[in-house]
Image 1 (cartoon, rainbow, N blue to C red):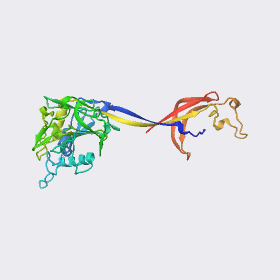
Image 2 (image 1 turned 120 degrees about the vertical axis):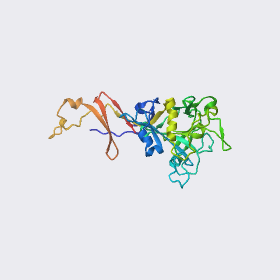
Image 3 (image 1 turned 90 degrees about the vertical axis):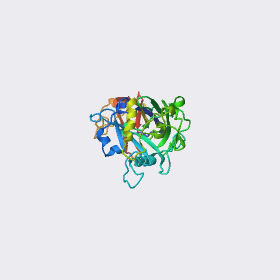
Image 4 (image 1 turned 45 degrees about the vertical axis):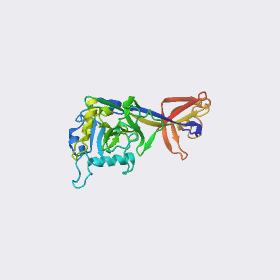
Length: 346
């Protein structure tokens, strides 16, 4: 074994971005989605609904994303206690996402610069196993249909110059369009009047760093003439109206949801150089006489050769940190120089 200290120029750090489909099997588009009636009718069904790429009873079924509904007033689900108004599963969901996205229970959700009168939304949370780093902006294509009309939603990542951040990381507005850009005059709802106030703004928020999509319930309910689809949620009632299942119906009617994931891999390249005069002699004890210390094989005195099989990387404390194995032994003698590139991914 021979040692050589590496120089600073022998190190290079590089970052690469790897993209893949967000769904099972690296598929970018879901054209068929399923739910579990057991989960929907169970205790967790009051809070969220899991979406699968195939029938939930099949061994190959995997959760792709989950749908939940939140309302600041607790509407859309039964109260925990009839004597305490506004406290229900939907208010709990609202508070959870309020902490994740806004970081403050006193802040309101703002969509496209507008704060809706009714603070309610749908949240689509992509299963964590579906992506390693984050969702890839510009690849979202979610289509909602009521059976007659369809709206096509994407994020506006290609239309913004300066990125916006909040507690959840990067924030993009959801607009009508494709491939990260708004299309035509229907990019955002035109507005409607509720309780004497105009509600409008974007269709929601795209949060790639936490793998979530927040859909503005007020914008979806505007109706087709105002850029919505008249999504009826019954979110003003205090009963378990299963709002997540209603959004599922609008997604399954279109059967089209495209999304990609992104992973940034940092690589540390180490260039190990063996010059012509280095690493030519073997340190194997069988080459040396134990009694005299002489080389047993005279041909290795004037014309030595060795075979490099691995490279070990050590720190200053002589601790082995990493080992790189060559695919086959590399012959080395005084007539040859070698350059071995070691790649460490992390």
